[in-house]
Length: 343
Image 1 (cartoon, rainbow, N blue to C red):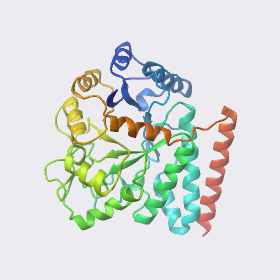
Image 2: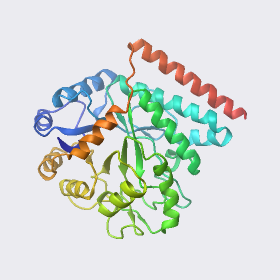
Image 3: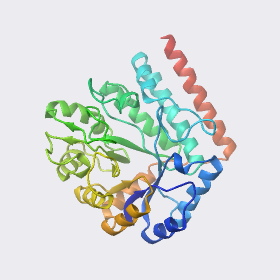
Image 4: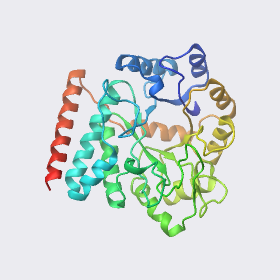
């Protein structure tokens, strides 16, 4: 198995993609708007990915947080609120807010499961700080550590009940970044005491099945390398101080925070301690390069992958029962949120 998660060029597999995937057996795949035309088409694409790899328990990822980060949207799919909605609810009534969050993410997960998605790159556990870039903003569960932990926990549980693996991000914390890592490398010069606050949500949810790294340089931990490429940060902070033992994936290797070729960056990320390299753009040359550069998945990577995929509870029922369950969850979510506005 190749320790890579690949994007795809379009809504159907090309012959070149199919041949490559059969040859190298990537750990998983991720889909974006360019891969999505309809419910029927996307369901067929995810089925073909499982057929090509011969793996039913295949990680097929999507970024479906809600709000401005959503690859699926109306009119074919539902619209989902950003995490900030639940943070505001938490300030009014933590118990009701947690229940509303759990309903939301289970219902969202059922929508993903119906079309063969198995992993959602959510929830965001970053702790936003004043003056930071707004790339996180309303994607976070507010700026209170207790709320982020409580809401992040029930979001993961809701996804799992729908048969979806959640991915906590962006470990060890993106909330202080002064730049968007899609376009530049952020550098955080904060001291260790302040950084400990950022770690708190990740430490509390260190038993999450999967996590995604931050392309950020934290000078207090490693003045030379960003977290994704830092053996020190991955070993001492993510695996050590945080205690995360789940499947660790890099953020997208094609982001401008990183310098170098995608294949070389993928190898560097794996050697630094990431279990899997994330390559989102579906460029055949880069995927072939990663296939040449990356070592085979380690036994630890395979163990973590199996544990992560086994953490979900697939919804057992007919499509009409799934729809009824989702409707009931959404009705409960709306009832709870309406009640909270009256508090």
